[in-house]
Image 1 (spheres, rainbow, N blue to C red):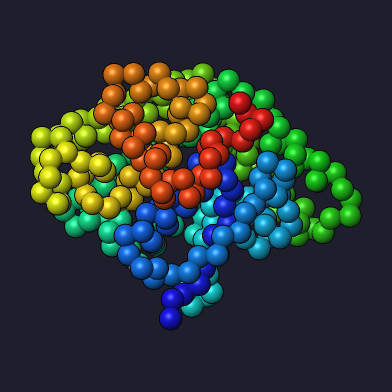
Image 2 (cartoon, rainbow, N blue to C red; image 1 turned 90 degrees about the vertical axis):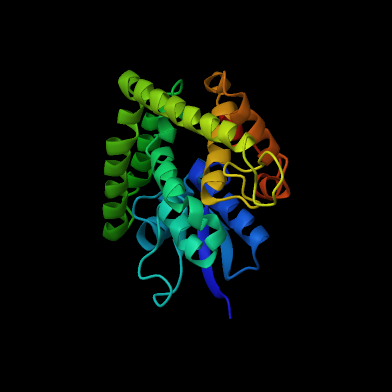
Length: 270
């Protein structure tokens, strides 16, 4: 019998999209080994600040989160990369043996990029807005002490991670990381064009010429989409293979199933 889990996510959270796209391509490659019930969290309107979410799901108040019973998961998984590694135990196609080390290295580099910095570069008030949302809930004298402590912890998380991410120096650092990473992908795609994919035909649909998307593909495609959606398409200048690769992926059934015609950023951002 397939095991059942709950994925807490948001439609416009880039890390949520990465995990959901990973699940979609994994299920496409193989029959479902696990059943994942999806539970949306409305982070645009404070859903991540609810007492249930902060006290029962994720004290950091972020998405995505994968939860299961104690026998399935000793603790909830609160990072997209660790969720992906867990999924790979069920779906080995996410980490093909021949490329596993390279995929892990590149995924680590991709997740070392601060997506918040690249997304809200021109909206520095976003960090303050997040703090103010917590203060509004804290202003209610009727909330429990347990909930108040959880909100105060969430406030510390915001102050430690969000405002510092939007300094000029930090943004420049993340831009350079992203550009260097995309250059690596461009080189990989160029190399795959001279080889053969696993079906023996020339060229490649996915980065390593595999017939199915790997975990790297599943995380990279949303990242490229985010860059385009926030007006950073110029970062793809000179990287024609990367853009063509992403455009092909955006036309797949799995991507369309996950995105349902949405962009990777909430409507009011645009």
